Picture 1 (cartoon, one colour):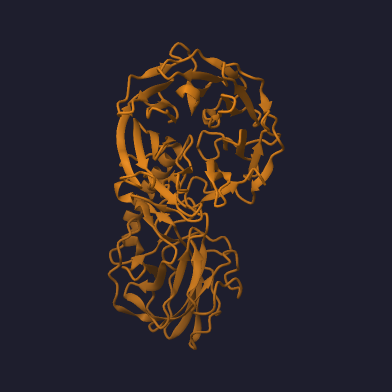
Picture 2: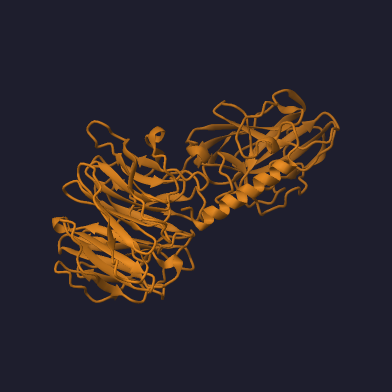
Amino acid sequence: MPSRRRVALTTLMLAMSAALNASAQPGPGPSANIVGHAPSTTDSAASCHHRAFRVRADFEAALNADTGWAGALDERATVTADQPFRLRIELETGSDLARRFWLQYRRNDGAWTDIEAADVPYPLLTPPVSVVVNEEYAHGDRSEDLLPGSRAAFGGGAGVVHEATTPPFTGAGVQSEWEWPLVIRRYADGAASNDTGDRFQFRMVDTRGACEADVAPAVTLQVPAFHLGGTFVETPGPIGPWQAFNGDLYFVIEPAETTNVLMMVKSSDGGRSWREVDGAHRPATDDLEGFATAFAADTVHMLHQTAQVWHHAFRTSDHPTHPDTWAVRDEPVAAPGKPPTQVAALASRSDGSLVGVYGGPQRIHYRIRTRDGQWGAETVIDADTARGLSGPMLATGKHDVVHLAYTGNDGTAWYRRIAADGQLSPRQQLADNLDTGEGDVGSILPLVYLPDTDSVAVLYRTASGHLWERRIDARARIGKATRVSERRVVQNAVDSDQTGADAIALDGKVQVLFIEQGTGSIFHAASTAAGQWQPAGLQVGDVNAQWVRGRPVRNADGRQVYGFVYDAGSNGGSGMNRYGEVDPAR
């Protein structure tokens, strides 16, 4: 089931497409292929010449300020993936033909492609390169003569803002300057990728052909360290980053909000750089709404709820015969009916079996997959209660007991155990003070199992906005509620229906990352071994974080740290996923 923002996105795209089709004129130019990326065939010489260019790194500079440049005149500067920059081009025109120009690019000497207008980070389409919004000037604001490449009289020009073409221009034997706000994306529609070292050339074009180039405007791309890009899967349970024995890290993302297919990305250098692996064989099922993973030996298992429920599995680089390959794709699990919110939880057990929990119209359900790949009969959880249930989280404990916590739509939170033989324990109430809105179903964080005490920590967000914890011991006795931090935590940041927080066990202690309500900053808090919470400290500031998920990993020094991926503020779009680490020992 598509989310509300994806339904709205589809509606807007259809409306835009209809308007463009109604207004488009025959002939070459962006209006002829505004939705696609077909290269223009306009390669004949036009009566225009590029005389100079300069790349501007300061995206907030005034249109005609001689500041904020990324390099010298005509220098091929380096620009950062998923970060807007501006390109100023000096053009000479040889005729007084009234015209509009548009911009084309080519990557690594490939085919020339028209550049479309698509903002960042939340566009209606996600091309590899696009013209974006810039709030420092308006579309059509007159440019001044900044670049010294041409000796011709200055005839004007303009700044371009979120448009595929320039304003109309007439001028013979004059020079003009045009400034384009652009972005080059790490991942784009169709799961296309741009990489560090890629070379991008640009040229201006009109209906008579491409402008000749005395100097070819160009940039080189740099993907910054610890940058993943792409889009978070929605309503995630634990999704990594999972670490193979050899140190490789794995995480699941979508390439773009407008192409929500499943990608497994990998880092072999401690999270500094990431790339997709086995993209040619990724699963066909998209709509990544309810999603959870579990790691077993050398395989990342995934449970994925759309209109149905699916299982996928990916073999890491530790696999002895098929490293870095998809092992299971689009395996049907269940068709429980449409839930209010798609949710999924998954746990692996020592015998190779899996326990999967997923949403139904009013309840949550579970099935067990045997080690030989057979899904057993479905069990409805709390079939005798009138309340709606959702928000499941799982953790595997001693003797392959699977701990389960979930929410009710009446503000309650509940706990059960699924024994190794599949039997379900009686339900126990954890809380009755959760919020009750549709966006509050995911108010329970990933469960934390503490093997030293055979106990499980359940952390949840109450209606006040605070995180609280209750611990359940080996005999299923529930301890008192303890507040994790005095800071309030964001809920449903971008239609996730979840609390913006994550939790793991590390060195016998519970570690939490949470997004502060009102600031978007990420804080870290940890308990003592006795369960007392220490003051939270700022981990990532100056962001508007919206998702965070992490796991224990070994860093380059061999220490166990809290490795995590967070969305730094895409507002449901793409290009803002980054990797970080918390070292509790420091």
